[in-house]
Image 1 (tube, one colour):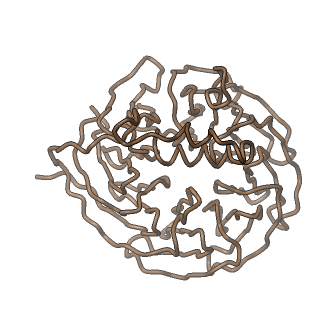
Image 2 (spheres, rainbow, N blue to C red):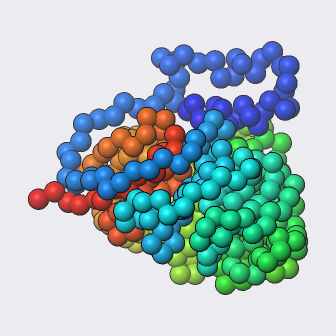
Length: 392
């Protein structure tokens, strides 16, 4: 079992089993005995050049709380936030800091962006709306629990998901709460929540009970509900089916993956399942080249055909290395791991084409790509831009 997942489960278990003398035995494996020991890196045939364009430091990065604060691209800027409250606006081409602000709150979720506004969530349950021009706080609103994913806005509503299983809709101008939805939270969950998608007046959100729901953004009314995973097994650990990773939309199709469940394609208009495949993932899905990409929790990266007709390729060489969500960049696919290595694969066949190390503390936040430039935010706070080009 990977170190991150062990820690995530322990965080979920401790409130329930405080004082239990046997809990340590469940996770007391030596490196030699651990069936989920991370794979050693293999030598690869490097076929791309990975040039670092610039690097900046953003506060304490992810800190020690298993957070996954992720940056966001908007126009000629990239915005990033750290667990200790630093928010930084960086010119994406040169890496020059346009402004830097520190908010009083310890941040745990972000960064969301819409039309000159930034949205952040705090560990003590606050959502903040900031002016993207200078970092000033427009308003803050108190919610019911820790915000572990970027809130999203559309000029009318700001939506935020909290770790207690709730989804909240807030008035964009004032932060006043308009509605809340309370899901059925299982006994045990992985630490994290999915990032809501807000599009054309509809909110799409995944929950720890293995379901994805669509809501009317203004009223919070549920328009459809789909089950991505069904809890199975006798123990509560075996029954964990969180939809925690990033979802993706392409056209009228929504792709979502759950832990110990499935990757599923849904029709965004009705919630009808178009296809599904069994897997276990907590980092989420992406799409490109007619594929849907998922990193299984066992470290296997799989490219599923978008039409649901099967698997284009699999890459198992990064076993149990706690991979990030796969991110397409140009004709390649990028993933990072718990040691901070950036791995580049061909989108065509899944073969490795390049590798570099970004951050010795690891990198788990979703990466960003624009053309052949990739932006990686390491756990220690390093925000780095790389240009990926084929070798002659």
